[in-house]
Image (tube, rainbow over all chains, first blue to last red; front, top):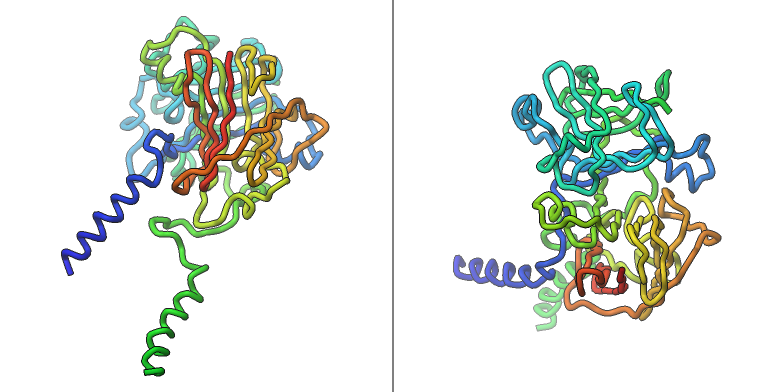
Length: 187
Length: 209
């Protein structure tokens, strides 16, 4: 019996090893996702329900908490963090906006954060299409702005980013574990 | 003897009747059709990752990694953003993805392709910029379509915004590919073959810069 199951195991693994060309990109453990302002813009667009033009889009990869302590440990305090996983997080503005009182021309930027317990320093950087924060170059910063963080009621398992309408424009909300940061953007 | 044959056949028959419901081996996710549209508004602000996760393909391949490791100092040439549905035991082409009907080349949003410099796609010149890419699959031929209706959900194509079409033959793979996959096969520093793979189908789109 043992021999048979061993044989079956070998056969199965043999078949599996040939099931897909090994060079093909696998599915990421921290999958990429996208958020828009207005929220769900692509769906509104095909339903002809867009009330305002597309203002912003954020592309990021979503790591999971998986029982780990995130802030202060996995994401160390005082260090530049890519706000996600894999490629650096990209934020694109489809019109000129203002962040932290500074004008930001429309275009693609990389978004990083320096995380600490009570305040996050958000960094908008001009160097796009890069991986993580490993080659972060402060000379290419567009701006830095400090934002306050709050505690969420629920534990957020998958790091989440989305836009919300605010009194002065919109806010980019970034949440993971029980921490929520809010970056105000003036449209 | 007859009884024995019947007794032997009966379980076999029963099993084969149940066969269509059987899940493919090694697949623990339920076999369900893709959610056509995201639920509006979401139940919680903190949504789960999509079932058909988004992914990104650069040419040069893995450009962000090349950049991070200092192996490139020139800008990228092309980027594709698409979502990756899974086969989950379903017949795909001619089944889930209907022939002669526009298909978003993925799931969720329309597939986006951006050329960072002027390109030649299957012999035709394409201006630098961002487009959406979809296809109209047939059994032996796919028609790829470049379209300007950016930031749209992939269920409906605005055919009035079609810009260009490319017909390519369909090839068969030996084994079924579980996740819809787009990848770049490098031909030179400035030219690549975009490959599209799912189930037992493979198509190619040559792109050069």
